[in-house]
Amino acid sequence: MKTRKFLSLLIVLLLAGIGSAWAHGGRVGVGVYFGPYWGPGPWYYPPPYYYRPEVVVVPASQPTVYVEQQSVPAETTNRPAEQYWYFCAASKGYYPYVKECPGGWQKVLPHPEK
Image 1: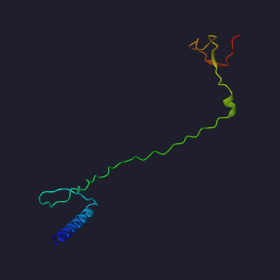
Image 2: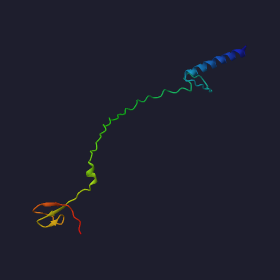
Image 3: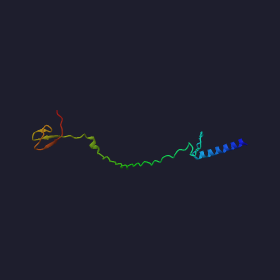
């Protein structure tokens, strides 16, 4: 009879312990304690500290700018660039050998030396 009461008391205490363990997240802990203990079990952790989310400000992106390429006539692209020599009739010389021309400069197409 004593054994039966002891076993039934042990079963009641185990069931009570399992029920409270489920209330604290389903963890069951086994340990040896000396003296009375009235606090939460060793499985209890304080709730995590709440950190406010960081405010991130992203500036609005600038609109995309498109620049259209102007069409160039085909005959101008096939010709080599014309370069001129500048002739001074007053001193009968070409620029850069003659620095100043009192009568004005004349544009002359370059002619190769023979």
